[in-house]
Length: 99
Image (cartoon, rainbow, N blue to C red):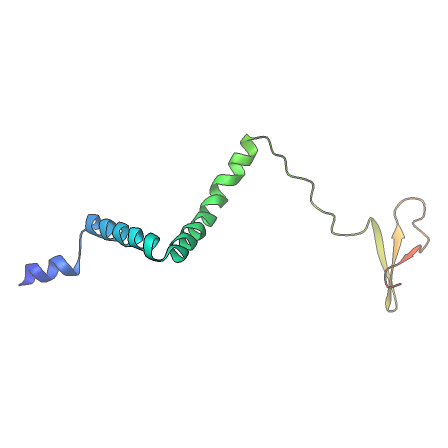
């Protein structure tokens, strides 16, 4: 009796793989939306590892990062923010962000 319990409590890895394959095949026919959504969801993390080297191999170059600030310096005066343009107009307050 102990051997019978051990067989069914701890199945072999081959039996687990075969059972999983049978369940996946049945799910792809009976409930294709769930099956293929799981397949597409599983491809997301895989694409993080595959796509960047593939893009580099094909010669794709990433664009420059978008600037995070307006060129020049931001000066705070009360409730308004004024931006001084870079270059020769640096001392003048030429553009008001708030209107």
